[in-house]
Amino acid sequence: MYSSIKPLLLKLFFNSIPFYRRTGGRVIYISPDETEVHIKLPHKWSTKNFVGTIYGGHIYSAIDGVHFTLFLRKFKNKYILWDKSSTIRFLKPARTSLIAKIKIPDNEFDAIQQELKHNESVERTYTIEWKDNAGNTVAQIDKVLYFKNKKAL
Image 1: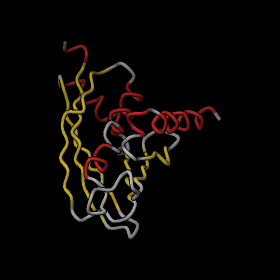
Image 2: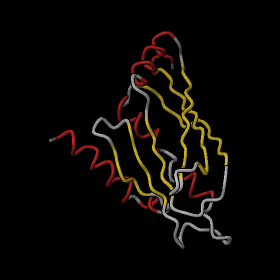
Image 3: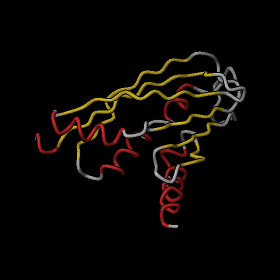
Image 4: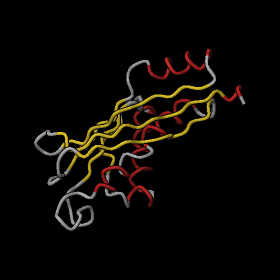
């Protein structure tokens, strides 16, 4: 039972803190092992721009910090972690609500830890796709995360 409460609390955390609420995004699912998060970005007056599509800033900000938070929770205070950079590609106008599914690949936590045993730092790139109601990809975001071994300081 405890394992199902932790994702629920994390979901409530994301959806209630003001800086995330203002993005318009809502976390709708977190897997029990906290490796997968689904986010919905509704097409409504507060997320639309003057031409009626979802504003690009909302598309980016609704996923910003999610990978960082998942890795931070998993690694606790063991490594230095930075959300180093992001690139966004808008593929088509967002005229409906959007869904993003963020998934940390299987064994990714172990792979990073193994690599940090032999290297001072590691960078990983993760791609997130926003899909519209028809399942079409409207935007792709590449997030680069930086991991550094605290022992290297």
